[in-house]
Each structure stands twice: as structure tokens, then as C-alpha cells.
Image (cartoon, rainbow, N blue to C red):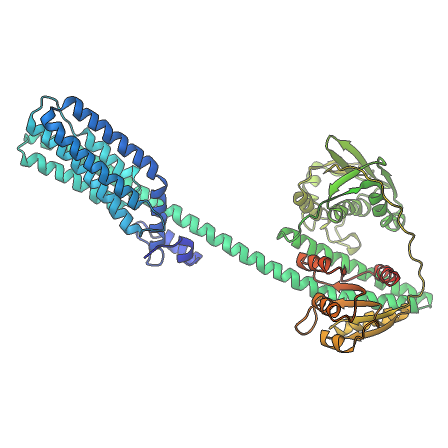
Length: 592
């Protein structure tokens, strides 16, 4: 029987492990756990084999030298021969016993026990023979102490093996002394010392195995806790994937229907109502994104995609997206950034980080001015979001990064978010491993800063002008299994001027799409049947039914989908998508 790893033999059962922990004073686990512990103890014994072998060989050779030096020739020829024979047996048994996963622990312990007992009997024999020969040199039983010491503490044997071997050696020695007629006083004195030494050693062996059993259970409990944490993490990941997809679907349809209403309603009071509805939907979308982001960051689902990019135009675009919110609150925004600045980072994650700092300043700082400052610090670029608002005390600076914390929003009004913005920033800073800090004092504003690795600035081509809000012309095929989302997409595309055909399954699309009849294919990722959206696009291209522009709209935010879309050369956007962004994307794809 070849013993395998303990982890593959013992079920990870935390209650059973805890029950073992409360009842192993008798040095015996239940049948399900004892074999695993024996393998564990065998591994520990194998870890010290080189120390044991070196000590054994060194002491044996030392005693061989002593025999040759102090014993007469007629005697040392026997003692040296015995020592060398025993040394050979010990080396063989050490090699045999210390092979984890190749020999059963019980056989390994028996072999190590045999070498231990033979060493002890050899020392006892040498002592007795020296007494019989009357060599004139006093031979004591100190050598036995060394052997017993190694058996109790150095070899790493289980307590039962160490104790039986040690007592067997001592009793054999005392019996030999008695048989050769040694003085009773010598036998009693030797027996007293050796018995006391064995009692202490037996207690030490018990304590050693007791501690080893405790360490083994603690390691198994740690493995069990890690396995449970991994299961919970996987369960949370599955929940996030499901929640991300299922909650984004209706929000996507709501956004499209609201855009359709906004383009059709003329009456001012009704338009105001539609605007309020759109604002509420965007707020709900922002809250959902924050909750999903903090959860995805906490379980390690986000991986940075690092690249070099110029900083000033990137920050200008970021500020432009917040101008309307700043004007509504009467806040002036400024950018202080050298023209030739560039960083090496993940632009999407860094944008989320800076945007959350800016939103925090706009919503909670009670400031009239917010600015972004960019300063070179050695091989990094320090990005600071500075406001002239109410500032934070030392205690508030400790709280501000906690989840669902809003210091100046006791009524928890939703217009100020849900209190996750700075918590997401903390998670992102840990993920990106950026130095960061907060400088603030009551009444003196706040400065949130991070330091990003510097990169070489490169000349950028001038971007093309924004597409005008003109009528969209083209034949668009929509493949969407959710009927509500399909209706919303079809309604909005027709309103923009497109000719639209919709299919619910990949099979319907493959049966009805004719070569050259489609200008743009818009598909969901998760579809009914055996194909997903990417597989459908690949099949259409293989059959020559559609080789043009393709847009994948999905609520699945996994990295696998992103990579598959990139390799298939498919444009990808996530639900719920803002109608304005959807229009720009479709207009660009139809124009290409």
C-alpha cells in the first residue's frame, strides 16, 4: 500500500476535526483521521533525517576512535566490528524508513525503532563487555543517555515506539549487568538514574506527540477553512455574475424605453417627468454599478490592464464628463497638469479612481472649487484632487474610506450616492499598489492623492470630430432572446432611422440572414440554444452570411468574454448602456 498525501485521504470536515481536537489526550484519533496523522508524523520524521544521520554517524565514529584508543587490541577488534555492523544497519534502516509516499508509516516507524534499539543494545553490550574484561578504564553508561536522548527527542518517533524501545534498552542493560554479577549497588544506582531518565523522556515523548497532533489538527482546520473560504468565494462570484447579468437586463431596457419617450414627448411637463425618470434610472444604474464593483473587487475578479497613455487629454475628457454636475452645484473645476505628462496604468481603473475622488468632492465637500493637480515625484506622477470645502477631522479621515459611510448625509438621500465611492477607491489603490494619502483639516478643504508610475509622453493624432445627431441609415439585425430588451432596442433603432430585423435565437438568424443583407449585427452574448453571441458571429463569418461590423451588447462582465470578443474582432459594450453612447457606437460602425 502506497500512502498518498494526507489531503487526498482525509475528508475536510470541520466539526469532526474540532471533535478530535477535544479528545486526543490518549494519543489516538478516530479511524478516519489516524492514518493521515501517521503520514504527517512520518513526513516530519523524514524532514530531520539528515540531522539524525549526521549525529548517528558522528557519534558512532567517535566511539570507534575511543575504542581504538583506550581498549586493548583483543577487545576493540570486537567492539569496533560490532559498532560498524550496527552503523551499517542504522544507515540502511534510516534510508528505508525516510522515504515519504513510498513506504507505509507503520513500516517506517518499525524500521527506525529497530535501528534505535540495536544502537542501544550495542552500547549496553560494550559497557558489559568492558566490565567483564576489566580493562582498567572506567566505562560508564553515559553512552546510553545519548542513545535514549536521540530516541525520545531526535528521531521523531511516535510516543509508543520511543517508550517501548527506550524501556527495552534499559531493562536489557540492567538484566545484563545482573547476569555478569555486577555489584548490587552499581545496578541500583544505574537503574535509578536510567529509570528516572526514562520517565522524563517518556513524558517528553508524550508531550511531543500531543503537540504534533495539535499542530496536525490546526493545519487540517486551516485547510478546511481555506476550502470553505474558496467555496464561499466561488459562490459569491457566481452570485455576482448572476446578479450582474439579471439586474442589468431590465435596466438596459428601461434606459432605451426612456430615451424613446424623451425623443417622442413634446409637452414640457411630460418632458420634465421623463427627465426625472431618466435621472432616477441613471442613479439606480450608478448604485448597482457601485455595489457590483465593490463586490467584484473584494473577491479578486478585477485584473489591471496596464498601458502607457498621455495624462492631460485623458484628464480633460474626464473633467468634461463632470462639468454639468459641477455647474449644477455651483462648483468651479480646474486642471493643473504639465502638457507632456504620461503615466503607465490601467486607464479604466484609474479613471474610476479619479472620478470617485471628484464625485466625493462635488457631493460631500461643500466646496466652491475643485481642481486636479499633477506633479512629478521622482519616477512617479502624483495626481491630487483638491477642494476648498469643509475638510475632515482626524477621526473622519479614518471613517471616510469605510463602506456605506456618508459623513454629511444623515438622511441618506440617494442623490449623494450610497457611500461606496471612496471604499471602491481604497480597493482600487490596493489592487494597483499605488502610494496614496489624504491631507485635510476642518475648514481647510481636502486633498486626496495617489502616485502613478511615469511613462514616456507620445504625440497624439487629433481626434476626429464628434458625429452629428443625424438620421442613422442602414440595415441592422438584432439578436436578443429577452423580448423586452429586443423590443426596446428595435423601437429605438427605428426611431433613429435604421431598418431593423429581430431574431430571438441563433438558429433563426442563421436561417434568415442572407449574404450582404446586413450592415450591422447587434447581438446579446447569452442566447437561447447551443450558441452564444460570439459563437454565432463566428458561424456567420464562416458561412459568409455576415462579415461586416458587429456589436456585442452584454451584461456579462467576465474577462473571458472580453478576451473572446477581442480575438473575434467584435465591438463590446455592457448593459445597461447609455442611449447616447449606443447611438455614437452604432453611427461609427455604420460609417466604417
